[in-house]
Image 1 (cartoon, rainbow, N blue to C red):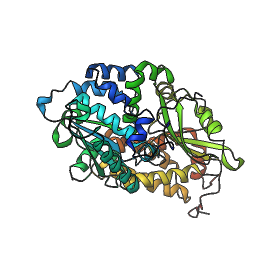
Image 2: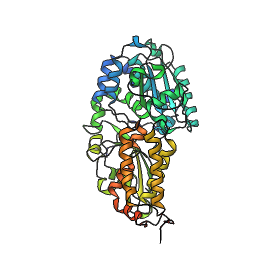
Image 3: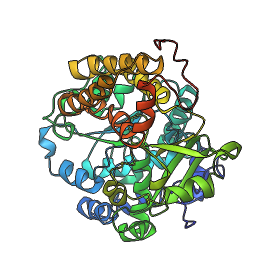
Image 4: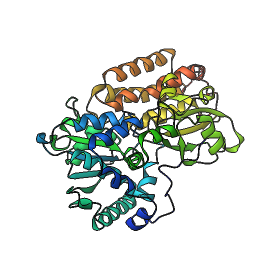
Length: 431
């Protein structure tokens, strides 16, 4: 594993909202270089970097920005929005960027504003991050006073202001159109697409929306060059990734690793292995809507291409480690209860599908399940994946299908009224 630190190099070394300390530690070098370049040149560097969106969707950032740049300004103002809602369970990387180096995020958004001619930016920050919101506002104020935000930034004629918006406390607001609806003061529910937000986003005007970590990579890419960023990772995934390691592991925390690091190296190297000397049962990758898999896949590299080949997705970068004392079915029930609670209710497949899945899993964990229930779970998963309105309902069944695939025997045991781990009471078993 390499030691290149792109995102965390200043963590704990500077006062988070101090422009003076940020600049002394290399901050705003990316913006200073960007204003000497043509917008097309900056976008090309981002394309060269193979920077994929770090929020979960993994869409190529350079391609997204190229498409947004092609939309003429005559269509109206272009907005820069940062998704800092971070509602995915097991994910806590963005809070570190905002709490320890928020000006890096602000610099990335400002480079975007220079490219697109945007005058307004919004950081949609998780409502529970009240302390971090104060840090962001202070950093924005200080950057404005220092001439890096506000009117006529660095004498370029660029006018750009950023406002912090407190999140609505809903998981679905992590979906970009629901987030835009929430900023507009509406209920956070996803819109029909198309039109996409690059054409009709905030106030139905062209909008560029990226995750905190994605924006934070931009200054380094501009300063050092896209090919340098790419060389840090793999040929398919440029740079580094902030990984959130939690669960039954010795050293929980956020780790910045170069793409190409294996999941085994992350868990057993940086993470110190399984806590309490126990054995790994499975890993839940990418948040609650990600895949669950056993140890056999741990040597997969953290690389969008390698993960895809193994039927996995990096998602938000959450890695939840589960040891062999836990029950697969009981764990899955907890996950699906989360989705049942967080579904916005707009579409039937997600609203009812999650509810039915929880009911089936409750039957299985109480000893009242039947063989047909496993088939119903699979059928519900297919229906939700194919017919749900947005990504929440489409991805919620992923832990269901992957755990059924890798732990079929444990589900069968519950049908027979037996919990191999002894976690389920099986009080409903007929005797």
